[in-house]
Length: 529
Image 1 (cartoon, helix red, strand yellow):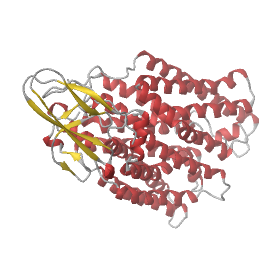
Image 2 (tube, rainbow, N blue to C red):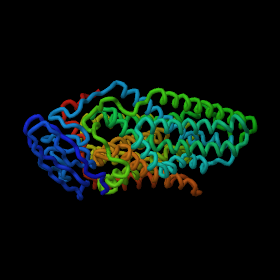
Image 3 (tube, rainbow, N blue to C red):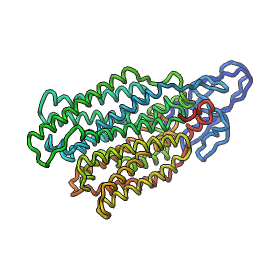
Image 4 (cartoon, rainbow, N blue to C red):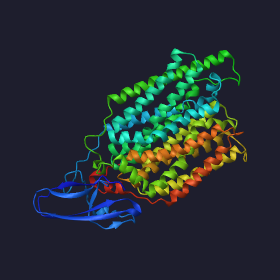
């Protein structure tokens, strides 16, 4: 594993003490330890070799849980980059401004998702206004998000890891604002349909690049600004707002009328185009205003960290990649998360087509999508909050939620193949139940992965998880370019993906190293909100 090397750290003691430090190298089966014992009798600084890979050292104690993790309950964490003090290594404080940071970033996440799924809910209208789009073009608009994520996740995560939250978030907001403005440009200067289509593709590309940080950064926001007992809740709130963007997009049929027939007349087509033009202008204005708010106030970090581990510098980009590639548990979580969540999240952007096969119209599909998104938001926030309050059972929770999701999607499978009588209430229940339970697993996957990969950067962990998610979604959306006679094949993919995800998940070992450090410290164990 690539290591930054051993550096000299200085520890100062006012009386004679003996200090033994255990340094960790590697992860999992390749884990090894080195013990260094020093004795100091004066206040003269004593040089110590420290390991910058782990960032946290522990006084000698028994190893536990089969992963060679220090006995955190009986050991005191120290910090190689900080001056050592016997008790409180550094002051800890939480700020009310953390809620502003969470709110502004979450609104950005919501708006980015709304822009990503602009055209799916009004696919019938856009095809009437601009003939030739069809399901392939609509799916490609959503597919640009997954393509650009896979291509740009590494450099974008490097930017946020190296330059901090403020630079990364401003870059993300700038890309979204630029995309919405470019999409509005053809409607101002030209009536050429091809020009508008090209600008829509460019907008989708820029919004897709911004999505890398929108989906990868929530664990970093939580770690930098929130105390331990609020971290999963903060991650869940960011992801909930991102999901709410999907719900907002399903309100678009209220602003863009649906064609009255398969071949509307010229007057109706012009009315639909005017509706689309108004919608595009509104989103461009929101994008510019949001960028202005982010520029006005979005600091990189608080003056005083909110937890013990927030003091510790995370690994750099290269060291994080090296450690992540050797972390078997994280790799298993990546596969499980990508397969289980990737398909349903991509399916939501083209949900209309599956519902059309069941006899629902564009407006009916709108309300099904909105219901699914709203219930998903509530379920995500509830699971995140319960995980913060009752910690240490994430794997069991994921298995139970996955099994429940399979039940709802199997029910939808029976409806799609007309094995049972189709009714509207069953469509609402199966789609809403399946999507909401599936999405509720996201903050739990993120939290367990961050714990497993500590001290890797949270944005790096979020990046590799969502890269796997988007890679699966990319393959799924490409299938819409194949001229299948119907969309019943989607139900097979939904069921097989979630069922297969249980295999790597069951092989994963839980590891709560980061939270054990924080939660065993009285001054970092904040009460629930």
